[in-house]
Amino acid sequence: MIEKSDNEIVDAYIALQHSPEGSPENDNLFWSFEEMLEIVGQEPDRALRIILAILAKDDNAKVVQNLAAGPLEDLLSGYGEEMIGKIENEARENPKFAHLLGGVWRNSIGENIWRKVELLRDRRGWDGVPK
Image 1: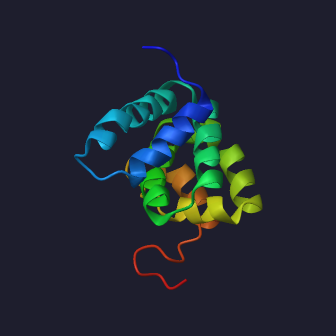
Image 2: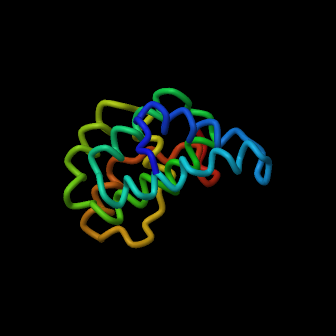
């Protein structure tokens, strides 16, 4: 597979979220989801950069929901100890990112990291929490 640039991944991931499930467009863009899984698993700093770029470019509810419950949640599960400092800094300075953290579920995130995430995240607008 030819490695894609961060910008290509960002654009394709966003387009994937906006394409109808089962459509040819969705099928053609699904590589961006798979690429994000691979990057999250192997390149956590790059994964965070791409997550932030996607969020900066499109904060539509569907994009944010899929980003929170997908790449960001996986990043925290796999690299929480390594990445929590960067995530804390970003959440303190970026309200959109704090909101994105609000959509992360604990799953396999370690207790220590989860406590920190709970202090940072903005749950307004998630799961019926008033905005």
